Image 1 (cartoon, one colour):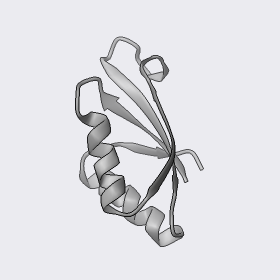
Image 2 (tube, helix red, strand yellow):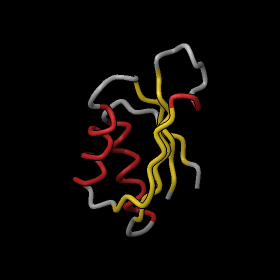
Image 3 (cartoon, rainbow, N blue to C red):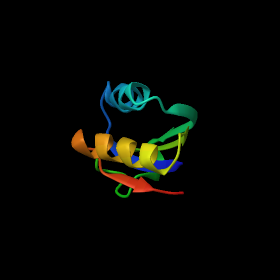
Length: 78
């Protein structure tokens, strides 16, 4: 699965996402952390795109729910 999330541009945000994924057993395949992909370049946000390996549809839903429970707005890419 691949998803994107816009993060505040401050230390620790990437670690929070990584910890949520690790706690749920998702294997990170690729990360793209790009300050220039944000919707509004002057918003002090960073676009994070993550590709992970999961154990199927239910696992994906569990991960998405966990991210949203931690106030991350997630867009599923595929």
